[in-house]
Length: 243
Image 1 (cartoon, rainbow, N blue to C red):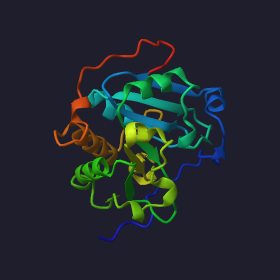
Image 2 (tube, rainbow, N blue to C red):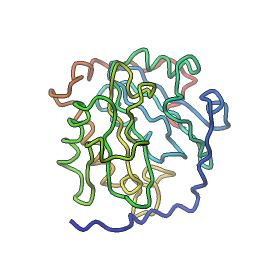
Image 3 (cartoon, rainbow, N blue to C red):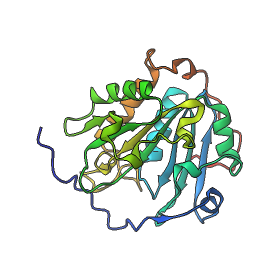
Protein backbone atom coordinates (compact mmCIF):
# COMPACT_ATOMS: atom_id res chain seq x y z
CA UNK A 1 0.00 0.00 0.00
CA UNK A 2 1.01 3.66 -0.32
CA UNK A 3 1.80 4.94 3.15
CA UNK A 4 1.70 8.68 3.95
CA UNK A 5 5.14 10.26 3.79
CA UNK A 6 4.61 12.04 7.11
CA UNK A 7 2.65 11.13 10.21
CA UNK A 8 1.84 14.76 10.93
CA UNK A 9 3.74 14.72 14.22
CA UNK A 10 4.66 18.30 15.09
CA UNK A 11 5.52 18.85 18.75
CA UNK A 12 7.17 22.24 19.10
CA UNK A 13 7.90 21.52 22.76
CA UNK A 14 10.21 18.61 22.04
CA UNK A 15 13.79 19.52 22.90
CA UNK A 16 17.04 17.89 22.00
CA UNK A 17 17.85 14.55 23.58
CA UNK A 18 20.88 14.75 25.87
CA UNK A 19 22.83 11.69 26.97
CA UNK A 20 23.26 10.75 30.61
CA UNK A 21 25.64 8.09 31.83
CA UNK A 22 24.30 6.65 35.10
CA UNK A 23 20.96 5.49 36.40
CA UNK A 24 21.43 7.15 39.77
CA UNK A 25 22.09 10.49 38.04
CA UNK A 26 18.92 10.10 35.98
CA UNK A 27 16.77 9.26 39.00
CA UNK A 28 18.19 12.25 40.88
CA UNK A 29 16.95 14.75 38.27
CA UNK A 30 14.01 16.96 39.36
CA UNK A 31 10.66 15.46 38.48
CA UNK A 32 11.93 12.04 37.40
CA UNK A 33 9.86 9.27 39.00
CA UNK A 34 9.64 5.50 38.96
CA UNK A 35 6.48 3.42 38.83
CA UNK A 36 6.34 -0.13 40.14
CA UNK A 37 3.64 -2.77 40.38
CA UNK A 38 4.63 -6.28 41.47
CA UNK A 39 2.32 -8.91 40.01
CA UNK A 40 3.13 -11.99 37.91
CA UNK A 41 6.49 -13.27 36.69
CA UNK A 42 5.88 -11.66 33.30
CA UNK A 43 7.08 -8.06 33.34
CA UNK A 44 6.21 -5.08 31.15
CA UNK A 45 8.41 -2.00 31.36
CA UNK A 46 9.04 1.44 29.87
CA UNK A 47 12.55 2.62 30.68
CA UNK A 48 12.29 5.92 28.77
CA UNK A 49 8.76 7.04 29.59
CA UNK A 50 7.33 10.52 29.93
CA UNK A 51 9.09 13.37 28.15
CA UNK A 52 11.66 11.21 26.38
CA UNK A 53 9.66 8.53 24.53
CA UNK A 54 6.09 9.75 24.74
CA UNK A 55 3.24 7.40 25.67
CA UNK A 56 5.50 4.37 26.12
CA UNK A 57 4.69 4.23 29.82
CA UNK A 58 0.98 4.47 28.93
CA UNK A 59 1.27 1.36 26.77
CA UNK A 60 3.33 -0.54 29.33
CA UNK A 61 1.06 0.38 32.23
CA UNK A 62 -2.13 -0.59 30.42
CA UNK A 63 -0.78 -3.87 29.09
CA UNK A 64 0.56 -4.84 32.51
CA UNK A 65 -2.68 -3.97 34.27
CA UNK A 66 -4.87 -5.93 31.86
CA UNK A 67 -2.65 -9.03 31.90
CA UNK A 68 -1.75 -9.10 35.59
CA UNK A 69 1.90 -8.57 34.69
CA UNK A 70 4.47 -6.81 36.82
CA UNK A 71 5.24 -3.26 35.69
CA UNK A 72 8.18 -0.87 35.96
CA UNK A 73 8.72 2.53 34.35
CA UNK A 74 10.94 5.55 34.61
CA UNK A 75 8.98 8.73 33.85
CA UNK A 76 10.70 11.95 32.83
CA UNK A 77 8.77 15.22 33.17
CA UNK A 78 8.01 17.64 30.35
CA UNK A 79 11.16 19.41 29.26
CA UNK A 80 13.43 16.56 30.37
CA UNK A 81 14.87 14.42 27.56
CA UNK A 82 17.83 12.55 28.99
CA UNK A 83 18.72 9.26 27.36
CA UNK A 84 20.32 6.49 29.39
CA UNK A 85 21.03 3.40 27.28
CA UNK A 86 18.94 0.41 28.33
CA UNK A 87 22.11 -1.56 29.04
CA UNK A 88 22.87 0.86 31.89
CA UNK A 89 19.67 0.10 33.78
CA UNK A 90 21.68 -2.17 36.03
CA UNK A 91 20.89 -3.71 39.39
CA UNK A 92 22.10 -2.24 42.66
CA UNK A 93 21.05 1.36 42.01
CA UNK A 94 17.24 1.41 42.24
CA UNK A 95 15.34 -0.67 44.79
CA UNK A 96 12.28 -0.58 42.54
CA UNK A 97 14.11 -1.77 39.45
CA UNK A 98 15.76 -4.49 41.53
CA UNK A 99 12.37 -5.62 42.87
CA UNK A 100 10.98 -5.77 39.34
CA UNK A 101 13.90 -7.76 37.95
CA UNK A 102 13.93 -10.09 40.94
CA UNK A 103 10.28 -10.92 40.32
CA UNK A 104 10.09 -11.40 36.55
CA UNK A 105 11.22 -14.28 34.38
CA UNK A 106 10.33 -12.72 31.03
CA UNK A 107 10.04 -9.09 29.95
CA UNK A 108 8.25 -7.05 27.30
CA UNK A 109 9.92 -3.64 27.05
CA UNK A 110 8.12 -0.73 25.36
CA UNK A 111 10.20 1.94 23.61
CA UNK A 112 9.66 4.77 21.17
CA UNK A 113 11.89 5.81 18.32
CA UNK A 114 11.92 8.59 15.74
CA UNK A 115 13.38 8.31 12.25
CA UNK A 116 12.67 10.81 9.51
CA UNK A 117 12.85 8.04 6.91
CA UNK A 118 10.28 5.77 8.56
CA UNK A 119 7.15 6.79 10.46
CA UNK A 120 5.19 3.57 10.16
CA UNK A 121 7.26 0.57 11.28
CA UNK A 122 6.57 -1.17 14.60
CA UNK A 123 9.79 -3.05 15.37
CA UNK A 124 9.64 -6.25 17.43
CA UNK A 125 13.12 -6.97 18.76
CA UNK A 126 14.54 -8.67 21.82
CA UNK A 127 16.56 -11.85 22.20
CA UNK A 128 13.60 -14.24 22.44
CA UNK A 129 12.70 -14.49 18.78
CA UNK A 130 9.94 -17.06 19.33
CA UNK A 131 8.13 -14.65 21.64
CA UNK A 132 8.86 -11.74 19.29
CA UNK A 133 7.27 -13.54 16.33
CA UNK A 134 4.27 -14.39 18.53
CA UNK A 135 3.76 -10.73 19.46
CA UNK A 136 4.30 -9.61 15.87
CA UNK A 137 1.65 -12.02 14.64
CA UNK A 138 -0.95 -10.54 16.97
CA UNK A 139 -0.12 -6.95 16.02
CA UNK A 140 0.09 -7.64 12.30
CA UNK A 141 -3.47 -8.89 12.32
CA UNK A 142 -5.09 -5.85 13.90
CA UNK A 143 -3.07 -2.66 13.34
CA UNK A 144 -4.33 -0.21 10.67
CA UNK A 145 -2.98 -0.93 7.22
CA UNK A 146 -0.58 2.02 7.14
CA UNK A 147 1.56 0.33 9.80
CA UNK A 148 3.90 -2.53 9.12
CA UNK A 149 5.16 -4.86 11.82
CA UNK A 150 8.82 -5.83 11.44
CA UNK A 151 10.09 -8.93 13.23
CA UNK A 152 12.94 -9.81 10.88
CA UNK A 153 15.87 -8.82 13.07
CA UNK A 154 18.14 -8.11 10.09
CA UNK A 155 15.63 -5.57 8.76
CA UNK A 156 15.84 -3.42 11.91
CA UNK A 157 18.41 -0.72 12.64
CA UNK A 158 21.09 -2.32 14.78
CA UNK A 159 20.56 0.13 17.66
CA UNK A 160 16.86 -0.80 17.90
CA UNK A 161 17.15 -4.59 17.97
CA UNK A 162 17.31 -5.01 21.76
CA UNK A 163 19.65 -7.99 21.67
CA UNK A 164 22.32 -7.00 24.19
CA UNK A 165 22.41 -9.40 27.17
CA UNK A 166 22.72 -6.47 29.60
CA UNK A 167 19.45 -4.97 28.39
CA UNK A 168 16.80 -5.63 31.09
CA UNK A 169 14.44 -6.91 28.39
CA UNK A 170 16.65 -9.98 28.11
CA UNK A 171 16.31 -10.87 31.76
CA UNK A 172 16.17 -14.63 32.10
CA UNK A 173 17.71 -15.25 28.71
CA UNK A 174 15.52 -13.27 26.37
CA UNK A 175 12.49 -11.04 26.05
CA UNK A 176 10.60 -8.87 23.55
CA UNK A 177 11.43 -5.24 22.79
CA UNK A 178 8.66 -3.26 21.09
CA UNK A 179 9.83 -0.09 19.33
CA UNK A 180 6.97 2.28 18.48
CA UNK A 181 7.18 5.01 15.83
CA UNK A 182 5.89 8.49 16.69
CA UNK A 183 2.90 8.07 14.37
CA UNK A 184 1.25 5.43 16.56
CA UNK A 185 1.78 7.45 19.74
CA UNK A 186 0.53 10.76 18.30
CA UNK A 187 -3.15 11.76 18.27
CA UNK A 188 -3.53 13.29 14.83
CA UNK A 189 -6.99 14.71 15.50
CA UNK A 190 -5.85 16.57 18.63
CA UNK A 191 -2.30 17.28 17.41
CA UNK A 192 -0.67 16.09 20.59
CA UNK A 193 0.71 12.94 22.16
CA UNK A 194 -1.86 10.43 23.34
CA UNK A 195 -2.72 10.68 27.05
CA UNK A 196 -0.72 13.89 27.57
CA UNK A 197 -2.40 16.67 29.55
CA UNK A 198 -5.89 15.39 28.86
CA UNK A 199 -5.33 14.55 25.20
CA UNK A 200 -7.50 11.54 24.34
CA UNK A 201 -5.82 8.30 23.44
CA UNK A 202 -5.54 7.81 19.69
CA UNK A 203 -7.60 4.91 18.39
CA UNK A 204 -4.58 3.28 16.76
CA UNK A 205 -2.67 3.35 20.06
CA UNK A 206 -5.54 1.61 21.81
CA UNK A 207 -5.55 -1.03 19.06
CA UNK A 208 -1.85 -1.59 19.70
CA UNK A 209 -2.48 -1.98 23.44
CA UNK A 210 -5.29 -4.45 22.77
CA UNK A 211 -3.01 -6.45 20.48
CA UNK A 212 -0.26 -6.67 23.07
CA UNK A 213 -2.76 -7.73 25.74
CA UNK A 214 -4.10 -10.43 23.43
CA UNK A 215 -0.58 -11.66 22.70
CA UNK A 216 0.25 -12.04 26.39
CA UNK A 217 -3.08 -13.67 27.21
CA UNK A 218 -2.88 -16.13 24.32
CA UNK A 219 -2.35 -19.69 25.64
CA UNK A 220 0.33 -20.06 22.96
CA UNK A 221 2.35 -17.22 24.52
CA UNK A 222 5.58 -18.99 25.58
CA UNK A 223 5.31 -17.51 29.07
CA UNK A 224 1.54 -17.86 29.51
CA UNK A 225 1.91 -19.52 32.89
CA UNK A 226 3.29 -16.26 34.23
CA UNK A 227 0.26 -14.19 33.20
CA UNK A 228 -2.75 -13.60 35.41
CA UNK A 229 -1.33 -15.25 38.50
CA UNK A 230 -3.00 -12.63 40.66
CA UNK A 231 -2.02 -9.02 41.01
CA UNK A 232 -0.19 -7.84 44.10
CA UNK A 233 0.11 -4.07 44.29
CA UNK A 234 3.43 -2.69 45.42
CA UNK A 235 3.31 -1.47 49.00
CA UNK A 236 5.98 1.16 48.35
CA UNK A 237 3.88 4.29 48.74
CA UNK A 238 6.75 6.51 47.61
CA UNK A 239 6.35 5.14 44.08
CA UNK A 240 3.56 7.18 42.46
CA UNK A 241 1.05 5.61 40.12
CA UNK A 242 1.42 8.55 37.73
CA UNK A 243 4.06 11.20 37.17
